[in-house]
Image (cartoon, rainbow, N blue to C red; front, side, top):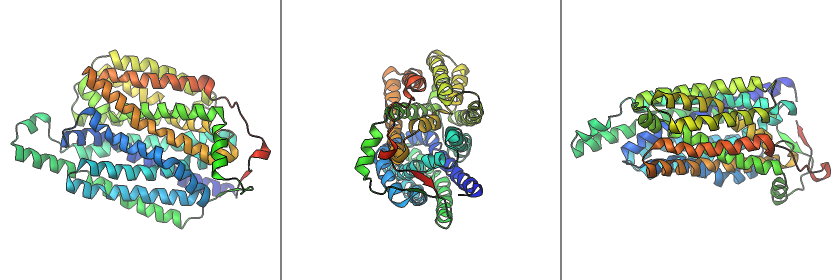
Amino acid sequence: MSQNKNLFAIALLTSLFFLWGFAHNLDPILIPHLKKSFTLTTVQATLVDSAVYIAYFLMALPAGVIIRKFGYKWGIVTGLIFFAIGCFLFIPAANTQQYNFFLVALFIIACGLTILETAANPYMTILGDPEGATMRLNFAQSFNGLAAALAPAIGGMIILTKAFSAKQLSAMTESARKIALANEASTVKAPYFILGCILAVIALFFVFTKLPEVKKTDDNQTSSKNILHAFKHRHLSWGVAAQFFYVGAQVSVFSLFILYASQSAALSEVKASYYLTVCGTAFLIGRFVGTALMRFIKPENLLALYAIINVGLCLSAIFGHGMITIYTVIGICFFMSIMFPTIFALGIKDLKGDTEFGSSLIIMSIVGGAIIPRAFGYLSDSTGNIQYGYVVPLVCFAVIALFGLIGHRVAVKVTPQDQPVSTVL
């Protein structure tokens, strides 16, 4: 395959990282918005995250089968179709005023994201020099970070600026309050409709664009054999565990930030959404800085260092006061920026013919985003102090540090006779 075709494919893939990052980073805006609209507890509000990340667990292996049978390109197209359908479902969800309908729409979006991530992450590592796979994936994920900076600002401006305060709502009559909350819930329709239209256009673009595919010289391996082979790799098992805890930590930090800022620093929802944009910007800058540092520091060493720093910052988030807590969380976002792509690349390193199923297993571990924020919410509700919830991400970052220090090492390698040879055509 020519260098130009590789570069074009990398550029096209990178746009997907931005799109799914944008969808994910609208969720922290949705959570306080729906919490107020439907009078939910913190734990109930985190069902938004549960709906999204359970889809990752349920769809990751089917996504691997789709990609293995039809290729990366058609896996991406399928993911974009699911993604678009879920976005369009926000319109009837808002019209019916049913919280469960919103959860269904988010679940379908997440099914699409699962297929996209299962295809795009390993595909990005394959397109180019294997030694640069981690850096290449971190660079692409930087545009996910760009979405983390832009989505809260855009979502906050469209969805939260017309929101009524708790004081204003309490002063209304029951009927007026219901109308006000219904109008608030309807503000989600426009951004998700526009996003759905963009996704439909991009899906068509992928259909009519020729992309390089990965072919295997041995077509006789069955899916069951490959999944068993994938489990033999010790570093993959560590990668699955590390990604489970990382995604749980990231989702807890971002999704509950507005609630956290409202309690720890007494910020309004709108002002907190601006600081959430700062968190996203720190996340973006951290991705670019981390990618540059990997020229001089081994990815696994940088991962361990950043995780250890975040353990310390979580202590500050627990015991700090006022704006110090906000600046602490901004720091956490900076240092966790490289974690997802670095864990992913290290986890699937040297898997060869097991790469598709290894990728699926790591994507399945994203279910941590459904489970760990619930623990965060439970701890916050039971103690009456959301700051204590940061005990949960503290434990998560400790596990990630262990992966960077010892778990990343490739302990089992399958012999060439056991594996098909991958070639890029």
